[in-house]
Length: 253
Image 1 (cartoon, one colour):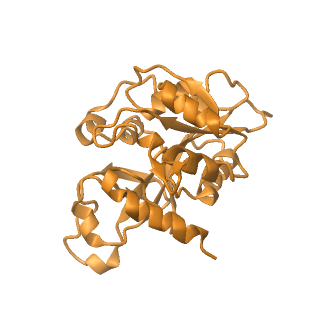
Image 2: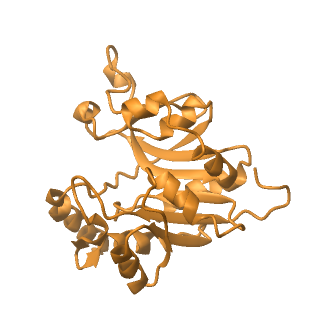
Image 3: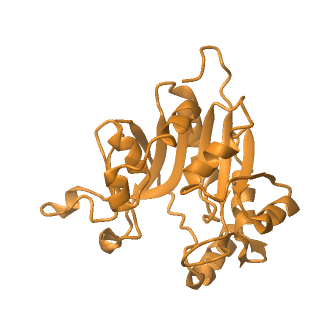
């Protein structure tokens, strides 16, 4: 936990790698004339609660692209198994940073206000180690999609569990409960982030391939902020036309 009297400072870090089983070179793919990475960076650069914005990568092509539009870039080890490990290394040279927001590099419509909300809550609740976001599921058939992560929360808004399976299973009273789609946006208190990456992957994490379960397996409280933001990421080349249409709509008066 930050020392008493320490001024809280937040780093927003965008981990970006070249390798992707479904979409190699995705960060540099052009959307409406700009790289995917530039779209993400420019939106997060509008945040009011982020004191330092970094791109963390292990690929010189991504570094050159990020530098071309003015981003500060940190070259990290190519051996990192997760984006969380990458951001932990990237923040290392910045001892003044007390909190870190992990911003997915494939979400060109990421909402700066949502990033600011997570950062502000982290700074204002010293005992909170980790925070994320979720939105009401728009279509119930998404419950069966293993690529859409679901989350359930307790009465205080903390995560009970995350899963790729239907969660909750709506056996009765399906209209009484709205399932939640987890958004890939995380915030950490810095000392907790350093502890998190020192833990080995847990059994649940390995089974579901969801690293946030490592925190739950160690008894960590994860606050889940509910939002109406339904922004989506770029996962496959087939989604490009749809995302370009959404980007164009955002610019319309």
